[in-house]
Length: 373
Ligand code: OSB
Ligand code: MG
Image 1 (cartoon, protein in one colour):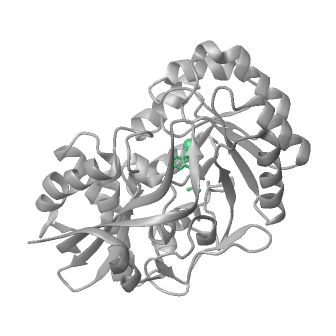
Image 2 (image 1 turned 90 degrees about the vertical axis):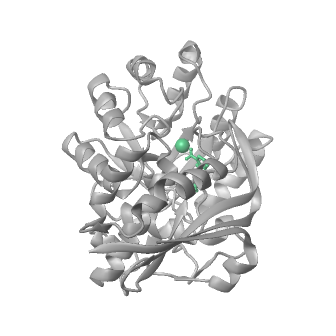
């Protein structure tokens, strides 16, 4: 049984080593909302909210997540007994519409506590089977095709098993062509973060020439029907990210044929229970899935790595090592990658598999609030 006694919200500022630019905006200092959860038996863990500073990816932001957690999500759960973490999401979903990133941060914390209490590594507690995972890198929008190609080459040499290029109208075909020329055999894909319209289809179809593994989220998150029209016209598999907000959208995608691959981010779909359900449904339909990222700190990364150890995560995940993002992470050990592009699933201890660096978090904290029953 898990019964929350207290949750501490903290907002930290963690500077990225280099700005990260996608079609809808750029980020330099990552503002990250962390949760520290304590249960009635004195067990505690940490979780992370993926909401970015501004609502450029979905309507959620650090501020909306803080509000939702403080006012609507945490107070009713304090002291409430749950026999299993999978019971948390239905309760949150009955209380509040949307705000999935805020819900996910809290729900994932319950899985962290559950794993601690069961004495199991989070990956095994979730049903994960793998011991090491293929890692991909997500490269932000750069100023020139040559610079991007050079960067991609360096990352391929560092071992990454998949290279994802961010694109937007005007920053696409030339960039992809340059990278493909530098890396003729690489597992290469692009992510548009919803920057195109269906009217761009003749242009998007030109991406078919580059042998990409997939084109991620070319159209708006709401556009499942238009994605299906586009998929009919394109040879390259489409992959959905922003569109897949839960089980219903997954079913709609399958019914409509909107895409052939799914990017699962627990933070986007409201947590791990929904992620497991999407993973299972896609397995039944033989739709491969992979684990996306939202520039998480080492805490969020623990949850992503654990989730990605499940069997149908057959494509490399956006699970880059700590050093790709931060001068220093907030966990010990930091997340690393082997020279052949693998991350090792920590199985040597219960819970997240990393120690949280409280002193460092303290020094980075801009805002803190403890809620207790
Ligand atoms: O679309 O996958 C995305 C980062 C912020 C917002 C959206 C996305 C991303 C990434 C980063 O691609 C992947 C990572 O965390 O390495
Ligand atoms: Mg994406």
